[in-house]
Amino acid sequence: MDSRKESGRTGGSGHATQLRVPRSYLAHQRGWTRLLSLLAAFAFTGCLAGPLAGTNFPFEPCIKTVGMSRLTVSLKNTSWISRTGGTRVCFVFSALPAADCYPGGYRCCNTGFNKFKFYADPACRRAITDIAYQTNVGRVISVSSVYFEDDGDADTFIGKITTLPFTLSNIDGGVLCWTLVEPCPTLAQFTHPATRDLNLFEIALYDKKVDNYESAAPHPSEPQVPATKPVVRFTREARVYGIFLLPGISFDDARARCGRGGGFLVSVMNTADWVDVQTALTEPSLYGEFRDRMNAWIGVDPTDTSSWLDGGAIRFWPNNQPPRVSGLCITAACNSTNGQRQPRACSLEPTPCTSRTVQGFICKTYTAVMSYIQAAPSYGKTYVYSMYDMYSSAANTYCRRLGGRMVSYNTPDEFNMVLEPLINGAVRVQKSAFDSNGRVTVWLGFADPAASRWVDGTPVTFSKLNTTGAPGCYIIRCPYSQTSTAGAAAAAAAGVVSPLDACTWELLPSCMRLNLFICELPGVFEGSSGATFTVSP
Image (cartoon, rainbow, N blue to C red; front, side, top):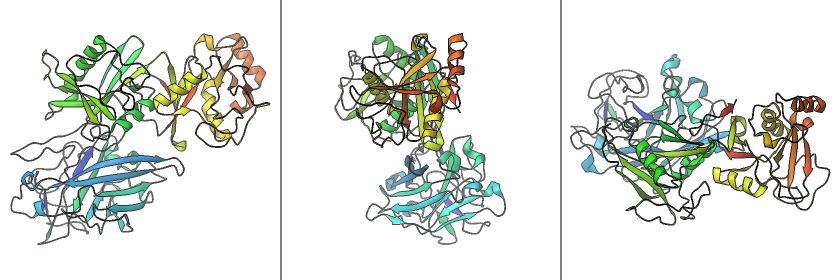
């Protein structure tokens, strides 16, 4: 794509593009490559943005034409840094073949870029730190040249990173990264309010000005901003399924997203399950104007191809499907039926787990197991609460399969925050979980019989245990605020001030006991995996 300077802002001209999540926008015209999530005005003056965003980013007059650049960009990863409470954001770049670019009389098919502009929240100028880039032939280089422009208008506030040396020869696999900290520690918070609710992060790439114009435009795949709601949702008995569109998401990120929402990547246990999944995957809402095929991650364990991630053994595999391969993940790939009643055309395909060509994923939630989710952005964690009891080993395994572990209470404040919804009755539990005094018992996640380390490897810095030792299984016993007289009396008798005051810590004489459990998962809660949970805050 080209940008020809006509007039406007200091810093040069360019053209606007938008990275879209979770749905993709594909353009295909006269042999030009398909563009994932890229919207740009077609061959007109004024740099008006595409229909998804409705902004005028980058707020300067220019001429834009689709298909006139070889550059592509996608969001490589967003990684939460629990130690600092921030997010590391990385973009990865590549170049399309020359045959896929239409020059149109300009130089845009033969240039790299040296400026990266982005549409950020004006309140976030102090949130971007530790900027660095790496070409495919060099080392990691820190960048200090980040600037902001707003012309006194918050609606036109943009940031730009300059002095970038990307060329067509060094761009393939090159990356640009930065860290987001308070007051905007996540990419969603960093995004300008004008596009935040649309799940769009707008960027523009520029080369050096020659002949009074600058060029370079990405053909980006969709970035990994959290998918908050399933596009398709259906229920079978005590199981809820949700299909999410998030093009470019990896298997590990999809698994973690399902886990934080209380579920797993889907397992297909029998013919009926496979029919249901295929039917859901051919829903017209999953297919945009230009997409006639999609694929979605499912829950085969790549380290044990005889098991599903939810712990079930794989005893069913559809006929005429390729075999599972150790080290590869599986996608369900389906063709659009265009809303017609046609035979389902879905297949199960072994796929590299790091592939960024997958459009989405399918979560499956067992509503009889988990009932409550605690979102804790300040801790960089999500807590998922069980509604019925399990043995300690089974609870540990369940949390690991969700992508986390049993909760580790690193501070008294964390303990109070996690246990408060339980003793206040916000967490729904089965009646069998109560003792005769209306109290509930919850497993403690110690890593050793001496209760000196939590399962996350950190040392235990506070404890209310009177004794430790064999068999090494520990619980907390807490009052539960419920409508029954026993529960209310127990809470009153405990003189509840905080969970730390109200709950007792105990060493059990045997590990063969059934108790509630709470899982701790890294990352910030984005939304349910399909089921309707009570969520706090």
